[in-house]
Image 1 (tube, rainbow, N blue to C red):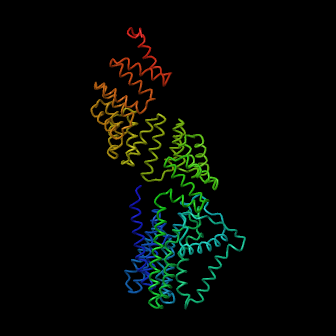
Image 2 (cartoon, rainbow, N blue to C red; image 1 turned 90 degrees about the horizontal axis):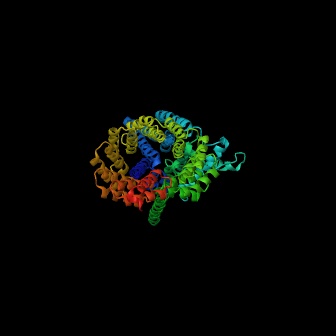
Image 3 (cartoon, rainbow, N blue to C red; image 1 turned 120 degrees about the horizontal axis):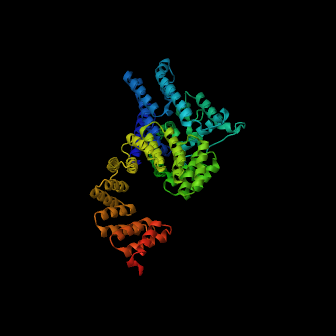
Length: 622
C-alpha cells in the first residue's frame, strides 16, 4: 500500500519517454526537438498518466513506442535489418503494455511520406508485420473490453450518428487542453447529443474541412500541419468512441487518453515557432528564448499543482466534484474513501447524491450498505446490499459485506450462503482464493460449525502461508476444537509474520496454559500487554495465570487494572470476587459480587455466592 515505488518508476518512465521522443523528433529533423520533448515532459495533461499509478499502462508502452520509432528510422537510414527486428520487437512490447499505440503502423507510413513526399510499395511491405501485430492485439483488446471489462454493463446507448458527432467534439476538446491546459479534471462531464439536430456535427465537419484544406496545400505550407495534426488525430482515433471503452461509462474524454498523441501538437507548435524565430534578428531570438523558458516554467508550476491532487484519493475526488458535481463515480468513490476512514456519517450525503444521479449504480448501493452498517443501521444496510445484488447478482463485494452483517445479526445460514458465493466468484489465483476460504471459514466458525470451518482455514493458510490473520483465526478455531498443539503452531506462525500481534500472543498464552506450560503462557500474556497496554483480556488472563502460581496480590492488581479500563464488566468483577474469596478476602469479594448484581441484577452466580456468604455464622450478625 506504499505507492512511492510505483510513483518513482512512473516518473522515470515518463522522463525516459520524453528523452526518447526528443531523439525521434531529432531524427525527423523537427526544429526545436529538445524544447518539444521538454514541454511534453512537464505538460499538465500528462500528470494523470505519470501520477496515477494505474496509468503505468500509459508510461511503459510509450517508452517502447518511442523505441519502435527510433529503431525503424535507424533501419531506414542504415538499411541494417537488426534495427527493423528491434523495432518490431519494441512494438510488440508496446502493444502488450497497452494497445493505445495500435495506430503506429500508420504513423510509420506517415513518417515515410513526411520524409520523402510519398509512400512507396517498399514502405507498405515493411509495414505489413506491424499491421499484423496491431490488428491481432487490437482485436484481443476489443474482445476483452466487450466480454470482460464491460460484460453486462451498459457503457453507451447512442447510435453511430451521435458517436461521429461526439468524436468531432472530442478532438477539439483534446486540442484545447493541449494548447491551454487549465481546469483539468479527473472525470469530465459526460456529453450527450441530439443526433437528429445539425449543430452537434459542426465540430466534426470543421475538422474534415480543415484537413481538406491542409491536404490541398500539402506540398507547401500545409505539410507540417497535416503531419502534426494528422498524427494527433490518428493516435486519438482508438479513444474517440467508435469502440466502447469501460471508462466511457463515466466520461467520453480523459486526459490520459491523449498521452501518446500530445507530442504531435507540441512538436507542430514548437517546430513552427522555432522555424519562425530562426529567420528573425538576434534580439527577437533572445526574447523568444526567454519566452520559451517562461513557458516551461509556467507549465511546470501547473503540473506541480495538478500532481498535488494525486497525493490522496480524497483530494482528487473533492477537486473532481468541484469541477463536475454530476460525477456520480466521484461521489461514490469519495464515499468509499470516507468509509475506509470510518467516517460513515460523512459518506452518506455523497452516496445519496450518487444514487440520485444514477439509481442503478450497484457500487453506490454497496458503499451505502457499508456506511449504514458502520452506523449500526443493519436492516437498512441489508436492504441496500440486496439492491446491489439485484442490479449485479455476481457482485462479489456485496456478497462479502452481506455475509459479515449476517454474522452480526446471528443469521449464520445466510452468512454461510453469501460466503460460499464469495468463494464461487473469487478470481482463480491464490491470494483471492485464500481470502475467500478465510471468509467462509469465519462464517462457519461464527455459526459454531468449527469442524466445517477448519478445512477452509487450512486451505486459506496453504494458499497464503504468510497471512498472519489466517494463522491467528485458524489457531483460535483449533483451540475450540481442543487441538491445542496445532493451535500453538499456528499462533506461533502468526507471530512469525507479525511479531507485534498482541491478540496472537494472548491466544498463544491461552493454548499454552491449557497444555500446562504456564511459564511460557505468562511470558506471552506479558508481551501482549507490553504491545497493547489497554488490552483488557490480557490483564485478566495474566491475572488468572499468576493466581494459579500463587501470586495472588499481583493477580488481584491485574484484575483491578482490567476494571479501570472496563469498570462495567460484570464478568471481570465476578472473577475477581472468586479470586478474593478463595484467598480469604471475603469482604472485598462480597463487594465485588454486589457490584456484579448492580450491573446485572439477574446474575445468578453472584447472587448465589452472596447467599452462601449470608448463611455463614460469621456473616449472620452483619
